[in-house]
Image 1 (spheres, rainbow, N blue to C red):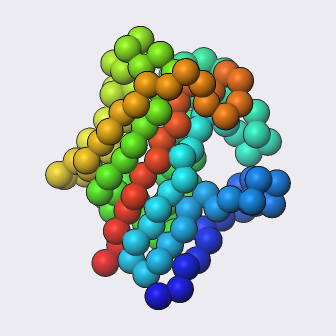
Image 2: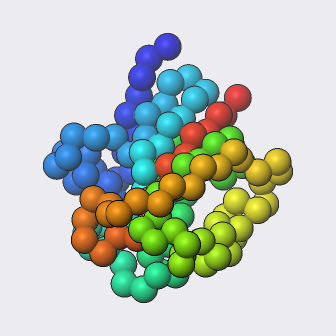
Length: 131
């Protein structure tokens, strides 16, 4: 099977600037790179909840570009700056996107000291399967 880069139009600048694909699709398998709470102009979204929502919206955008949705996600890994303080809010927001999928995906959450750019508080990486 051939590997295909998945690049939504609003993420083309990331693909060109940093030389990474927001996702890669190989047949029915989709691996999404970690998505953070930044807008199309690469600006980090202000506010904890708003940033977490934007990270999920970026995941949604990448999945849609690959022909998938949250119902296709079977695993996810999340990275959190100050995971203990953020976990309750993160779970509340996550459930707005993932709770509708049954069974829920396997999930690993990891606390980190920093993410790529200053001010980022969460990064969400998912894997999906579209039969």
